[in-house]
Image (tube, rainbow, N blue to C red; front, side, top):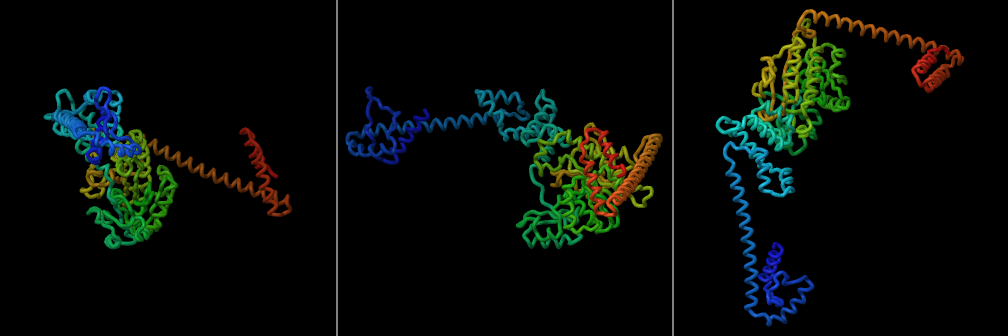
Length: 585
């Protein structure tokens, strides 16, 4: 039917537009028109048809020509009416579906499948419709579910509990925003439904670009004037920061300006200013940044210390030290010592310090806008693994601080993460409070930034002092999700519930010190013994070579090479090699 209608439309257009003489139609044996055959053929036949039309034009009467045109016009109008009728029926069905959605009614999965079966009877169409569900319909259902949950007593349907609506909402949010179910369960614990949608929408938008002026080389006002002349549109970051600038628009890349190359500013997220503001390092202090790369917080600490005192910049990954060192040189830092150690070993390596900043490695649940792979890749197992490492690093940082009973000034450690999970934030701080003599103090961050720390969350219970910590959310301050807490150490050593436990720990520490000292003395004695033996070997080689030092050294090298290259298949043979080397010449 569609093919015949299309051919008739083409025939009508040819007749009406070209206004050429119509080819004489041949009749069948039953004297009926054969409408399936085209009036005109291909291009080669059209030339022959034109010649025949000129000759046979007189053979076709006006009544026959009018009859053909009437048939074509009738067929085209019928096709247009059919298309209009189908469009009206589809629109009417859509309006009926929208009207059937009563207030408080939320589609369940079973109802959707039943409607799909009625609309798409074939199995193939059902699979395609289920695989590619319309996101606009999902979004409409999310809004309706949130509306019901906001006034549940009035708008909910009978037979549906609040938990049922929450399950539907979580499934729809996972489909619409692309999160896995474990992260969505965590976010629904932290936020009510309406705020949850605001948080998820904020994660879909990029954070504004912010820079920090380097007070070691310039002032914020002078830097702003220089960048404005280069076509950069910017404003001060806020009243809580004296060094931050927010960039709206730029004509040149911020990482290629002469001011950037000269070290006048650092491209840095606004949330990463907060840990240094909370720590507030002063000149002539000994400080540590336990996870320093790429150097944004370390250079900020050096600027606050005015290039005095000592600043240890540590990072466990050796590859990241290149960027750290380059930023330290570019920003003009002169009091930094870069080291590459595991943070858990620093109490045995570094001297006691005044202040420590621990920006701990985390799951990154606060910086989803910068890395969308977190939505599907991170799970609760990753959160618990990070929490275990964070607890060990925080205890090591507390142990690296000076003994406050002997030190005149108070000593502090600031703990921060770029995650909003309470397992990585409040739970870690609570663990430190239970195992070390520390207390939470005011961070010094403006109250307009973020929210207080959590004191309770479902089954979690935390100390009341936890509200002195600060939680930063993307949908509130338009910054990356962050957590900052400042701890003061008021007594040295671990916390014990009884005196007997503390006595046992002190004895264990004494034994470990004696064992370490004995091992160190033993290593020194072994080294001296090896040096004495090598001197005796060299004396014997000199006597053998008649006092020629070069020949004696060559003889010893060849002897060592022969012993080492000799094959060994067991521990006895390895031991025999050592005996051979130690034997006199």
